[in-house]
Each structure stands twice: as structure tokens, then as C-alpha cells.
Length: 517
Image (spheres, one colour):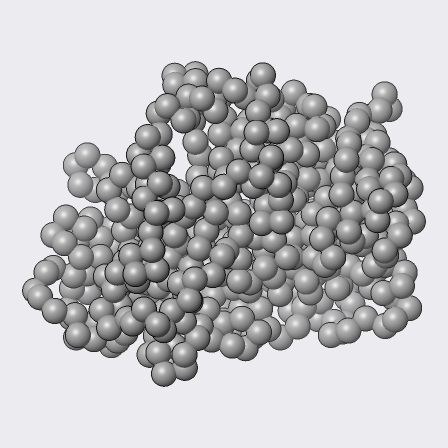
């Protein structure tokens, strides 16, 4: 018998289940776990905890009218299963021309943990068929110019020597590239040096579908409540270590007391962390960046491209500016996205307020924020240039990847907000970070997730880390250890150091999730 309760997945909950678990009027007054936000992070943490201890009382509050509508939504992100196969910003070039792959190896191992957990959910019937949320789409890097070709060759040499990337292919042959990416190579003139790498088992992931299905599963469980149109207005720590959380729903306010609070509200997590007024949150600021894509849905064009092709960021541009031409498959429909094109906004969420940024300035973070502004003029210039671009300018950028692109075939779409982390730095006063950071209080009663990429791709690893830090006694128990091992077979072992384990785990997940080439 399985250590974990097996709940057959259902595409639709009964009306009675929905009435009990998804409410326009919140009923919970006291819970073990309060999840703020209904995106990839909160739903993943919720499922993990309920698998570990089904008796936990849990409330999820979402400020919108349904879950996964901000950055988690399929159209609000690139859907890249970030495994560092194609993202050049996850490796760095050393002074001697060699390439450091340490960050890439770490990200790859973290994504493998997500694949294991998703495989478990599929096998247990807790998620629908894999094609409902994940598809095999090759991951490729593509560069031009002598310097970039030299860099990509060195990157491939370093990465293909590691077991995690041993299947990565490299070519400078134009005919091979035409086979890999015909849309990009057709009518490409000149004899400029070109190079590309390819990993066939890359993934396109609909994180919105994952979050919605995990939410649906949670709603079918005892001791779980999802309350929509709810906004947290205040958090305060009680003398007994629990949290009083004031929540507004449909104009009415009530207070919920919770033993553990997780702030998984995407760009909205920073203001909530500041509201909690904990020492671990001091000094953090946020730099919001909006994203835009050029989108093509014409079948005669879309059918010519089947890959996520990442290029190199322009000199002086930030890591999030890496251009890529992506196959997207959302709800069975194919499209091609190109971008991202960045913009500046003071909103922390697409549905947020223009006052989000100014209201986040505090005495404890003003120095780091001013330092980042002073020391990142390249970023400022980049954002100004992006904001000033016309549709023709954006299509000209697209034509560097797709020479035959016609302006009229592409439309501009808006992605989710990305709030980059600003934190204190002893040398410069403040630094801007383009990653994610989990913050937990010393007593483990509150956790928050800040930042952006690799974001949802590494959610499972990040949430397990939060569980380890906030539920240490339970995690040390034989019961939780065994259950974690069932959900994530590599748990407690290093995929980076154990080649045999990595290869056996990968073979299983690729088979289960239909990602095998």
C-alpha cells in the first residue's frame, strides 16, 4: 500500500465539493497553514504539505476571482522548463575564455526535482495526462558573430562533459541548423559565423495548468478551503507565535489566525513581507519590470518552428533581456512567441497599483534601492530604449532570428510582472539580483518567496526547502522522510554528484511525462 493517499484525478469537482472548498465568503477562523496567493508556489506547497500531513487545516486566499491569473498563467510567461540547456545567462564566461557551469548544474538539478514531483502526481492520478500541462520541445541556443560562436563552443565543451548535459549537441553547420530550425535559417544571407546547441528533451510547460489542477486537487481534500477575491490587509505576530492575518473579502474584513503563513503572491509578496515587519525582511526592495511578447498564431508560420531558441543578450543588457523564439503549446493550441521586450512600471502585479513601488520604499531599504539606481545605468538605458520601441523596431529585432518575418503577422502581448530583488550589499550598498530568494523567519512561522527566473521551473525544490526550514522536526521524522522519498525519489541525495541516480531518475520522468525524444 502506498505511503501517500491516492486521490483519483477528476476534471471537474462536484457542486458539493466546490461549495465546501471554494467560497465567496470565507469560513475559516483558525488554520495550521495560510497560503497567500493562488499561483504555482502556493499550490505546490499546499499539495506537498497535504501529502505529508492530510490532517493539516489549510486556507488559501487569492485576491483575484480565480487562481493562477498573474505570472503563473500560461500566457504570462515563456513556459520554458528552465533546465539551463539553452539559457546562456545561466552560465558565465571566465577571463581565460572557459565557461563556468556551476549555476546551470544547480538549476538543472532543481528542475529534475520538479519533473519527479509532476511524474508522481501523474502516476497517482492527482494530475491529468501530461499533455495537458507539459510538452517536449527541443531547447536550443543560437548565436552569431565570431566572439559568440567561440563562447558557445566553450560552453558546449564544458556542459557536455557533465552527465546532466551529455546529450547536448553542437553545430556550426548551416545545413544542420536548417534541419533544427528552418524558420530561423531560411533566407539567412551572408557568411557570418553561426553556432547552435540543442537538447531534444527540453520542455514547454503550462504552469497555469499545473497550478489550476493542483488547486482542483486540493479543493477535493478535507480541511482545505480556497477563498477568492480575498486581499491581505495586515499581518501581526501574536505572543504565542501564531499570526493574526486581517483579510478583506467583498468589502468585509475578518481576522484569521494561522500557525504558519506563506507569502506566495508573486510580485505582491514584497509588500506583504514588509507588512509582516520581521527582521528577516528588512533591507529588501523590489524593481518591477514589465514584459511584452510578439506573438504569431498563423498555422503556416507556427508549423515551421518547433523549438525554444535562446540567443545572447546584447552587450550592456540585463540577463532577463535574453531574446528567444519559442514554440508555445497552451490548451492544445500552438503559437510562437518572441521576446521578451522589457518595460518599466511601478506596478508589482499586472492587476496591481501604480503606487506599489513608491509605497514599498522604507527607511531600511532606501539605501540599497538608491545604490542600485546609481550603479545600474546600463539597465536604465536599456529600459528606456525598450519603452521607446515601435512595432517595427520590435519586428526588426525579430528578423535577427527570423529573417522572413512580416510585421503584420505578429501582435504585441503583455506578459506578467517580474519584480527583481534589491538587497543590501556590503561593498556597494545595494545590489540587484535576477533570481529567486526564499525568506523564512527564525522560528519558521512565516516564509516568503521573492524574485523571478527560474521561478516556477524550480518551484518544487524551493518549496521543499521552505518545508525543511519551517517544519524541521516533522521533516526529520521517519514518516515525512519516507513520504518525501516517494514524491521525489532523489530526495536526500545529490543528482549533481550521483550520475547513476540522475540517469535513472531522468529516464523515468521523461517516460512518464512523454518528454522522451
